[in-house]
Length: 380
Image (cartoon, rainbow, N blue to C red; front, side):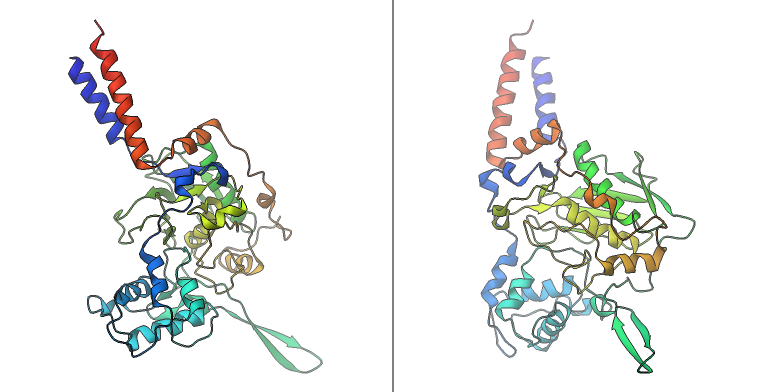
């Protein structure tokens, strides 16, 4: 009987679901995680200076896979990648440089490589050969004194076909995957993020306990999680969300998520990301917005570690109001942007303290199991 109880307890501790990694602030991140090895994107720096016509550049096929993942190379080229800097790669590099307002050279110069390795959203920038980042709407203004038209381009973009939630679904519910044990503080981050979009539109968002029936479902997952868009570990792709009315919102559980918005300057050299910044961006996708080429906008595809970006820009607001109309109470500022984001609960602090490297965690498990086994052995 003692052995059975001990065996059951051992299985429970070892096989319990793995939760995402959360920290109340940047200073709570253990030193061992402050410079965690990133995904293989870091190796792309070795390609700096590569140009069209070069042959057998070791590992260059990986960069082609990167560009294909974000739409710059069509899926029809799958399985035929080589290490040659061919026409396919040159075209992809030129489009990437155009999207991110870099000097369009078709070569892998230092600035291009620097952009490529920045952590980013997993949603593509190019869909079916069309760049979402440069499909902004054109607005015309009449100038009376010159009798001419001036044209300005709005940089907000949409998914192909401009999908949006139907007019009879303006009160949307969201729920968290029950396999993710989230604290109230973590859930409040998402509430603030949803609030930033409801402040400027006629949409309302309500937290629901029913994951199966909610309009929007949120979950933290690792690696291949069944949607064809696997996560890649620390940094790299941070999250992705599907266009309306899918409602699926997935985040990489292996990231080091800061939940209070308290980011110190040293965070720029660590593997940590502000959760609310990513949540606000992905909710934009859930509502129908695509990526923007405006770096200041929420819908810009990348975000550097240590950066907090949660306030909607005019471009974000105009884009979402085009889809859903304006909140009649919106006065140009977002009330949720002034919400105190430094509240924290003891469960989050405990979670941060518990998020230590795997080897030490295994040691603690072993000691705990040994202690429990010793106690059970002497029970009558």
